[in-house]
Amino acid sequence: MNEYLIALARAAGLTIKLDGVIGNQQYMSVTGTLDALRRFGDAYSARLQVERVEAQSTESKI
Image (cartoon, rainbow, N blue to C red):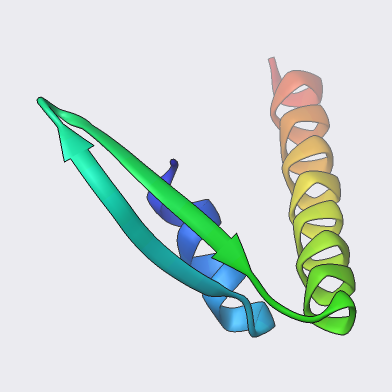
C-alpha cells in the first residue's frame, strides 16, 4: 500500500495492521468506524482535486 495512503488513513482515524510479509510484499488490514472511512474518503477526494488543479496549472504553463 502506498505510504501516503497509509498516512492518510491513520490521520482519518483508521487502524492499519500489518498482517504479514512475504518477500517484499506487505499484507495489511484496515479497520475503523464509518465516520473514519468518510473522513478518509473526504481527505482523499480533496487531495485528488488539488492534484488535478496542479496538473491543469502545469499544463497551461507549457
